[in-house]
Length: 293
Image 1 (cartoon, rainbow, N blue to C red):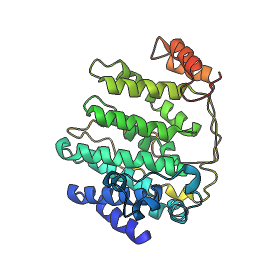
Image 2: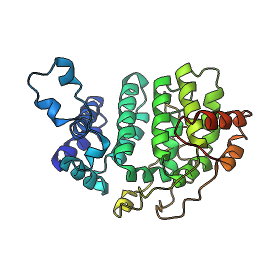
Image 3: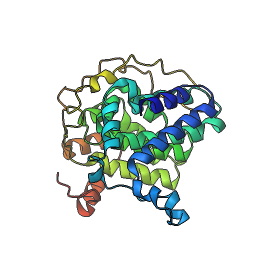
Image 4: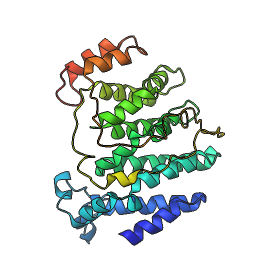
């Protein structure tokens, strides 16, 4: 697996879009092999559709899968951590200009990053850093395509999931202002508005802390020097990255500073006037399960 990751990392580290595309597909193929049922690949008599779309393994099965355990082990160190490499690729793509050549690659990178953050929760600690969180907020800018904005919102949710410290970083760099501005924008598409509304519901949920980062003693090696961000790049707005606060040490063992739903309601109320209605809807419908203030 290390040799395969080495080849794919070399490809996505390139400035050649063809090589980047190849590297992203290699990583996607690796994750597919880990997450999809092996038996489906072995059925010689199965229908073509089944061969192309084998059924996924159940989450409970992954922990007993040797390939997944090896994958998880490799993600604990910086050398083979996929999330950190995808973030670097995202930075590079946003700095290359020419959106007609890079937008699809940005979408693919975001899609893989979303999956990695769900498969390997300790990698979420990367977004405790302001410069990485800013990268996602940059993609919500109105100059980016709606599909990129929607996918960035999904990655943002996975980056904040069970990580109050990341949520505090998001709040400290005016993430709420960015998201609510997108929600209120006249240029936002219906899909983007729905994704934004889903994010706001998610944000208002009571916070809990799982041991996703503390259980990974080697995750601290994911730290690296901040990238030089913040330059104006044609085609991809860089409105947040490099605005300060991103150069500090990422300390994953600091107290998370959880906030209640009421506290977050007050914060969000600075930018939206109907937050009480959102909270009421959230408590009535419980779209993410049981909700309490």
